[in-house]
Structure formats: structure tokens, C-alpha cells
Image (tube, rainbow, N blue to C red; front, side):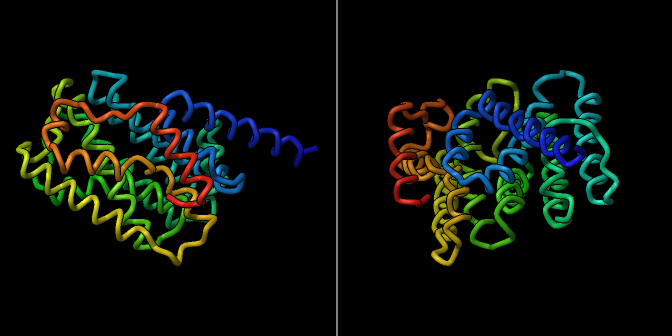
Length: 260
């Protein structure tokens, strides 16, 4: 009876995570739905967790409250790290199922929570190096927590993370943020080239095919970066979206080829 109750609870928690990602980041939802069931159980909770912490700075104007909410998640991860997790929260419960014996992944996700403190304020990253560190902590760390601590996954995470970040720049500016250390065309062009190099390094033919499905999260990154390299001002104007048809067609093709 107790086993059935636990199984039912975890099933409901995973369903909540899947719905949460679908509601708040439908592109990631579509990509993760191409994974097998084993990978879904790992990736949906981690990306639902990421949605929760990334939304915090945007759902309250009170910076202290935002910091406290991030700290709550940081403390929750610490409780998992110490094997003292008892919190009843659907995303946390599903997350703990993967993290309970994975202290390396917990450490990465705690770095992700810390990095999200930058989102609360309006100061720009002090240097390009700081920006890349932010991208690593908010993108690569998530991927490595799901798929393993492999340099190629870290590189790929930085590539897709920078592509997503550059897509968000125009909106961040509208909300009074200073997302880039330097907003001129040359600097944006350089960031895009480095992101493309990250994608190239991430194409590790030795990765298990089971793992590569999770890398389809970045299925549009090469297209986005190619556009930016050709016309860097698109980052400032925000004209980088592709049609839903084109996005889904590309994802279908990559899925059928079991590629990314």
C-alpha cells in the first residue's frame, strides 16, 4: 500500500512538472516530449524547477522577497543534499527523486539558483566573462544535471544558453535591465560566434543516443545564431522569432534522425 501511494504521488508530481513546462515554456515542452520516458522523469522536474526560479524576479517588485524565494529553493536543494528532504511541493518532490543520491547535480543547481539573483537587479554583467559564467550556470548546469558531467554537454549548454539569452535581450531592455556588457554590433556578433563554437564542441559523437535526445532542447539555436551573425541588430529589435511551422518541422526532422 505504501509503495503504491508513493508511486501515485510521484506520478502526480511528474505530471505537474510536465504541465508546468508546457504552460510556461512550450518550446522546451515540445523538445522534451521527444525524449524517452526515463529521460522525461529526469528532465521535466529540472526544467520545471528552472521555470520556478527564473520567474521569481518577474512576479514581485520587492527585491527582498525575490531573494527570500530564491533562498527557499537553495535551502530546499541543501536539504536534498543532506538527505533531510521532507518538503511537500510537487516540483520539489519530483526533483528529489533524481537528486537524492546525486550531490554533484545538486551543487550545479545551487549555482543556478545563485546566478538567478542577477535577474533581480538591473546592473549589467561586469564583463563578458561574467556573462558567460551566468550562461553556464543558468543553461549548462541544467543540462549537465540531467545528462551528465561531460565537457561537450557543458559547451552545448553554453551555446544554446547564449542563443536563448540573446533572443531575450530586447525584452530585458524594455523592462529596464542591462543584459549585455556591450550592446554594439561587433560585441553581439562576437558573442554569437562563440556560441556557435560551443554548439560545435557539443556535437560529441561518443555521447549515448539516449542522452542526445535531451540536447534537442537547443533545436533552434543554430538558426537563431546564424541570423544574429548575419544581422546583429536583430538582437536589439527583437525580430528573431521563427514561425511555429518551421520550428516544429525542424524538431520533427531531428527527432526522426535521433539527432540534435
